[in-house]
Length: 402
Ligand SMILES: *[C@@H]1O[C@H](CO)[C@@H](O)[C@H](O)[C@H]1NC(C)=O
Ligand SMILES: *[C@@H]1O[C@H](CO)[C@@H](O)[C@H](O)[C@H]1NC(C)=O
Ligand SMILES: *[C@@H]1O[C@H](CO)[C@@H](O)[C@H](O)[C@H]1NC(C)=O
Image (cartoon, rainbow, N blue to C red; front, side, top):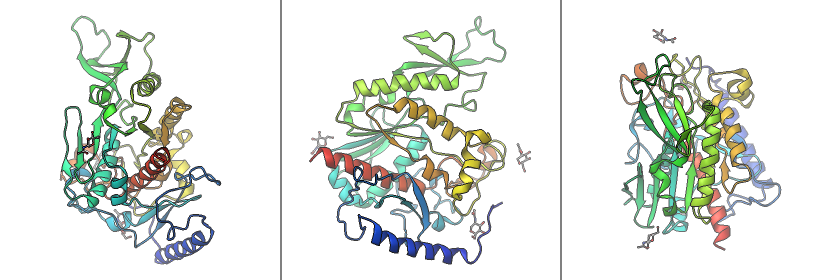
């Protein structure tokens, strides 16, 4: 099933590449990793630092911060416990930006710098995947971390030594939406069972009231905007100011209207001092068919750069095209707003090897849902997302706090 057999030379080549890269980067880089004591990155220096462009380099000395015993795991993503094959290779790849150094998060220093502050994630299960990675990493610095639950919060943790809360609010469309069964008279559409009414101008209750609790917020939406989640028997119907929008927008136009409204809400209602991020799409890696057509992701190394377009460019109409498609819509909506883009799509596109695939911790899971080529194994790729997010938080808060 695996697409690319490894030649026996491959590990040696990688090691050589790694050594030479390390050698040259430590000579050429203006920010020598071994000499710098703070995780600061020169975002405003030239050449501009772009943490989102670079390459994955195999580093056998790159270890995850946590294992299967982290109490914040979700079973289906706990790939160590589920005995996913080749986990040690999944966690040995290191993201190396082309134009600057990316330091790994230092959980102690990070929590110390966030003392009395709170970080919130709002969105769908891919943001929850992100959260779980963050919680398991931060727990290294505070073993007394406690599960945190408050009305409206889906899940999270409190780190008592630092008085820091990191939590996730599930709001898959960001806007409020609710199921309305078909009323006997009205539905003359064939097969219609009811609708999901989306109030494009009303944020979902799960996050609407909490936003001033947080100093940092990370938003996302995307994975629910498709006809698998909302087929024509149970479609999304968009309402504005309490009235159905006329003419009714399709899925993608509905997303545009929701984004416009939610971004305005965030700008008007979330305090200006709150650091706001928008995470772009996490790419899926279904190979040979979609999730319900036996699509598979049994790869044992990342994709090559020259493979990415054939997988993801919408013009090729592949099963994983929606990440870049949705990104165009999201980027357009965010442009010019006071929200930083967390463009984790490109670096994640490489990692066809890093999904739970068939190791889901339940015998019948694959026959029911197919392989999981959408969420990520933990430890794994979201740990790199955490490195990048924490570097950006440090850089921004560090700058404004003086
Ligand atoms: C903990 O942090 C909150 C802000 O999130 C603050 O209001 C509270 O006073 C802090 N508690 C302590 C004991 O410092
Ligand atoms: C998926 O695989 C199963 C078992 O091999 C097969 O019966 C089924 O027809 C396949 N489904 C699709 C959509 O290819
Ligand atoms: C695990 O690694 C071995 C050796 O490289 C390879 O043959 C196998 O296909 C890999 N398994 C997966 C799921 O990638």
